[in-house]
Image (cartoon, rainbow, N blue to C red; front, side, top):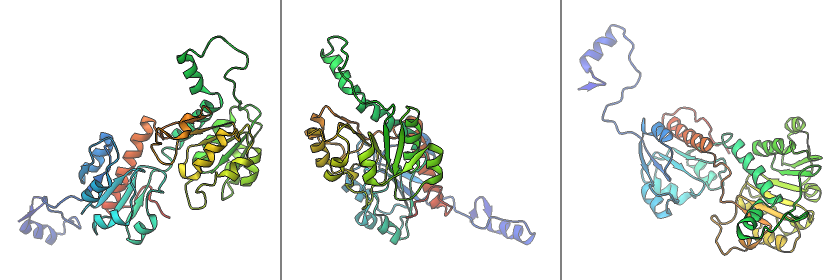
Length: 352
């Protein structure tokens, strides 16, 4: 028998003569750890996985059906998932004891049953930082599209509504001399604030569960209570995580505390908003307008009343949809899985 091309007798001689040998040998026929991907990814990230793992992939562009995930996860060592995949005890039971890591190609992890995954000793990984700039850019673009009525104006231009230049037609609120409120002052919230500062608001305020004194001082932002932010802000941008504390924090009472001229933008998670309350607020002019990149559910049904409102801009959850960003997110997720399966430190482990 030979191991890595070295016969047992030769190996013994090497040891006798003091030649150092690797502490562990693997047979050429030893099976690679198996990994399941719930969506197709870029080739560079796939190459990272295929160098050390046997990879199987859900081949369709739409999310993997739950029954398919339950069937295909069996016996796998790693799971490469998306925010559209609910990973709970049922999935973990189907996977079995071989599962060593659940890695999500997202910064949000509310789709993971983190307590159950942690209880079973399975590592978790996510992709913070990489999508910060792309999401901040999208938040600013969505705020401007909403306040300056860009989609509405574009539709008027295409449908013949544009008759001539008019002094107050298609006007909306501007950022100059306004008060901007940021809910959730983590990495993304801070980058949104930095970008909006260049538009010349008179004040940037933020609400966050913890003080961010140094970061806020660098930007010139002031920490306030949630109620103060609601009542003072002309523009509100939401970038907080979805937790039991933030679930539907923007409800009927919250919208009533906002200015009637307020523009509300959400690029975090749809669950932080009571969507029925938002519809009512927009229909009854309790607030001026809203821009949403995230909703509940996703995709939003075509008969949802939000689509019928001219003062609401809807985007299909494209906050991180910059090519370089998505490529790097996939590569990082792949590297996290490989590291875990090699018993090496996970690059961006999720510790909660």
